[in-house]
View 1 (spheres, helix red, strand yellow):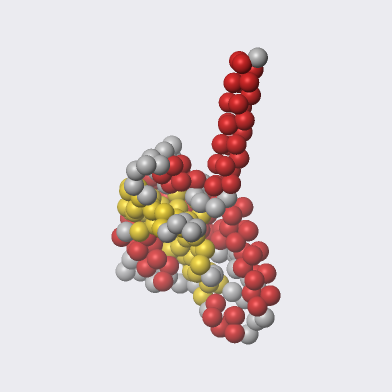
View 2 (cartoon, rainbow, N blue to C red):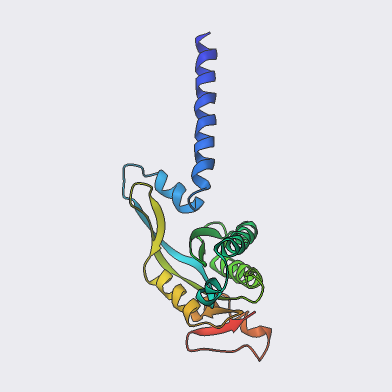
Length: 212
């Protein structure tokens, strides 16, 4: 009887743990959350090397909101971010945050090589160009670099990335061109210039190249 009770208690704990992990995964990116939960009594931050980051933004979003009703804006953003989420899993992109019309995702180091993760991020980024509403265009920046992942605050905590890597990814988006993916030189180097081999008409910038 005691053995049966012990087995039942273990099964109950494992079930509750699995439920909690699924709930946490709905709110935070899986890889850094798993890493940080393993050091519960340790620091709330972890350094990562060679993280591939994707940052997007809608060009002319402020003008769009000024001529659209709040329900229409909310419906557009909801549909857009649902498309992001459904596509991200296919390319191993983990959502870090959405702020207004901006999306930030990352492909963390794991089983795949940096080259393959960069290619995944590029394919994901190109697919997002069509996610904005009618008449709207996305700017997308992609960079690979070092970041620190950290839970900020307590009620509730928010996960975010800090460091030169994410700063550069945001610059790639800001200095990009609507309806293009702006890829940093670091990403080009990591992929062996695969993007540039697409054709001679790939436009270059001072930070990298633009592709669709």
